[in-house]
Amino acid sequence: MHIAIIGAGITGLMSALELLEQGCSITILDQQAAGQAASWAGGGILSPMYPWRYPNAVNTLARHAKPLYQAWNQKLQPSSGIDFQIHNTGMLIFDESDFEIGLRYAEQYQDPQQQAQLLDQRQLGQINPRVDQTKFKQALYFPELANIRNPRLLKSIISYLRQHPRVIWQEHCKISQLDIQQGHVQQISSENGLSFQADQFVIATGAWSAYWSEQLGFNIPVQPVQGQMLLFKTPEHWLPSMCMHKVMYLIPRRDGHVLCGSSMRQVGFDTSPSPEIRQDIFTACLEMVPELADFPMVKQWAGLRPSSPDGIPYIGKVPHLDNLWINFGQFRNGLCMGAASGKLLAQLMLEQPTFVDPEPYNPAQRLETQALAV
Ligand SMILES: Cc1cc2nc3c(=O)[nH]c(=O)nc-3n(C[C@H](O)[C@H](O)[C@H](O)COP(=O)(O)OP(=O)(O)OC[C@H]3O[C@@H](n4cnc5c(N)ncnc54)[C@H](O)[C@@H]3O)c2cc1C
Image (cartoon, rainbow, N blue to C red; front, side):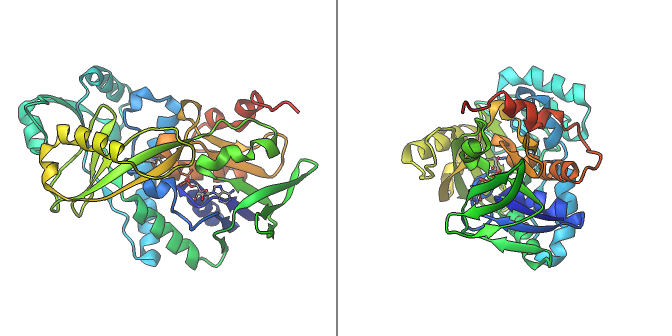
């Protein structure tokens, strides 16, 4: 079976990997270079930020992130030569109002990755001596939470897929038209007049996905939500754990880089970073770790999250069409849901038993209530 996937972010790429594993051949299309949009810009925390604030459907996919990425890292590394560094730093959360509910969440799910404990000041100092203990005397600690180096993850997948004999690449190729006849996509066409045929088609176009509303006859409620990020360079192992307070966070990488984020703004498809937001993020992160001010900021950027109602992605077949599938709307959690989103889509497309209940992500009912008047 030949499958054309529109969108080479983490969602499209993981879908491609899973389908290839099952013997399919793939054409990957992107309007720009692969792996340069939200999936590059994100932080790579392998969990929703405060999981108890999210619907079960989001956490269910996110919970598979670490084991699935570990397995992919092993599989891809020999051919890509890239270790995408699943960094087990644990996470400290300083929002007091979340302590109790966070502990209850951890207890309820008994998931080894979501074990949690409330640290007192002495324990906090031992786990992360960089935290400002004049401000924070306690923290909720998730010792098993990890982050992934997402730009390397993308590089590794892309390198593997470029070497794969059953993959065709079409970058800088914006798909603008679905040619639909009698409930079947015959082909898709690009802005510059190229057409592509396949047995099945997948739309994994992230924040750009509402573009398809008109052609599909549904209002697709996916909007770009800009997030900005700062990058600092500290010595290796300088910051021992991820830290979070008031939805702002610090993420240490193995080589001493520390990512700080992030903002949330609806400004269309604008990805220009701004000095005001840089200051907001910087101030919030210094509150947690004041000594960060001693180190150079090496970069600032913005990316576009694909928002969706409740943050639950749409994964499944498009209603009334027999060969068009979608996988988008992962919002703030596309990196941690990416591996499982791809796996679920592949199982649905190949009519295999699914490893999670697919219903919460099923586009059928959710999109049909959004049918556009004609
Ligand atoms: C600042 C920030 C921090 C984040 N932190 C985290 C985090 O810590 N953990 C986490 O899990 N998630 C995080 N996220 C969210 C995560 O990055 C996204 O949910 C995820 O990357 C979405 O992946 P995607 O593949 O759906 O979209 P994208 O990576 O945006 O890929 C979509 C692709 O589709 C292509 N495309 C669109 N339209 C067309 C078309 N018509 N034709 C051809 N190609 C097209 C685009 O060019 C793009 O390459 C963060 C996001 C941001 C911005």
